[in-house]
Amino acid sequence: MKILIAGSDGYLGWPLGLHLAERGHQVTGVDSLFRRRWVLEIGSDSATPILDADGRSAAWERRFRTPHDFVCGSLTDWELASRLVRDRRPDAIVHLAENPSAPWSMIDAAHAADTHVNNLVGTLNLLHAMRDFAPDCHLLKLGTMGEYGTPNVDIPEGFFEIDYRGRHDRLPFPRQAGSWYHQTKVHDSNNIAMACRIWGLRSTDVMQGVVFGTRIDAMGSDDELLSRFDFDHCFGTALNRFCALAVIGQPLTVYGKGGQTRGFLPLRDSIQCLTLALENPPAKGEYRVFNQFEEVYRVADLAGMVRRVGERSFGLSVEVRHVENPRKEAEEHYYHPDHRPLLDLGYVPTHDIEKEIELSMSDLLRCRERIASHSEVLLPDIRWDGRRSRVSYLS
Ligand SMILES: NC(=O)c1ccc[n+]([C@@H]2O[C@H](COP(=O)([O-])OP(=O)(O)OC[C@H]3O[C@@H](n4cnc5c(N)ncnc54)[C@H](O)[C@@H]3O)[C@@H](O)[C@H]2O)c1
Image (cartoon, rainbow, N blue to C red; front, side, top):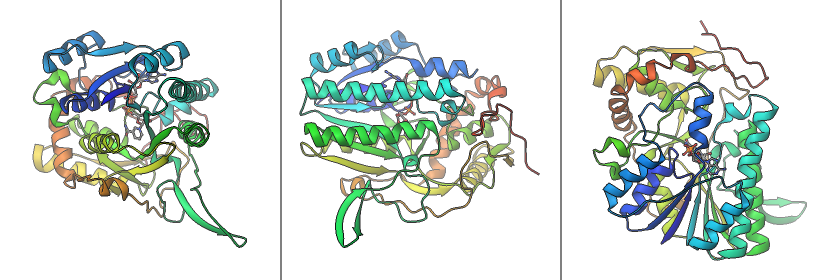
């Protein structure tokens, strides 16, 4: 297949490109490199030392012995987005090219607006380019499980059946975002569903859980093929942050009670699921939703797992500490989302989470100086009420 990966320089996009090229797909990448800039703005850097865009292209060419088809630019630029779709005529577009940070979107009005413009305009441009130049193309779009919030009932995959005042329908399941970032994903979902309805486009909207880990098999032992890995309070996600904190001897910081329950999945599972969705596209005009995660875990339990692995496998002394929760969220709640279609398509989940944590920690131990040199970005200081002040440890 000809596959355009938007966001190909990112945490997921880079390994996905490697994996798809290894499977014989023809991959084009586009990325504005915004993520690199945003992380610098926070005062952080990737724990894994990643090459610049030219260096990555050279590493790709060494690995696959073909030129790396990479375009540097933003999807918010209609000329660029439409030219890419018109010239490459992809069979599928994987759209990862958004700002993925809830805290960043909560800093102030300017950051909330930037997140909206970047995420919504990029998606709108892709939808219009598909309508005009590639109407049969499959849009594989990354949304998040966070779109649903934490309702006190089971969460289906996108839609639910409802009887109301004597009538029956299948309707979108309510979305209850908890940050401006999550809200952009909800808007995207509505926009994509409408484009499928009115223009007959096809799309898979992936409600993805929190991804963790450093490795997929296609990287082999070549460190130049490693993906970026963020550990700061703004762009680092829960389990990745815990692993990074453990290797530098800092307490694992659990927000509030730690009963927040979410879907999680290893990087290799995310790549596996996205590949399954690409290779099994929806019908023309179909808008389908997949909930994508391996299993649901309480955040405090994950911290306990990282402590166990750190002590058992690396002889580290790992402390778990609770801190004030900078977010507005339920800290103990019901959480029961479905995740059936990907399993039906052949997804084989990596159930050995502790093994995956061990692999990540062994990579991160080699990067501990890089992490330790950014110790000022480990504790959150972006609060959902608008204040910018570092959280305190709870007794
Ligand atoms: N990593 C996770 O745990 C996770 C969980 C759920 C959903 N997601 C979603 O998956 C997608 C990929 O996540 P990630 O962790 O790889 O994030 P990432 O930030 O590492 O990757 C996104 C890439 O897109 C690029 N980008 C952003 N805006 C762009 C634009 N306008 N034009 C071109 N490129 C642009 C960035 O420079 C970055 O390289 C995101 O949409 C994210 O919201 C990620």
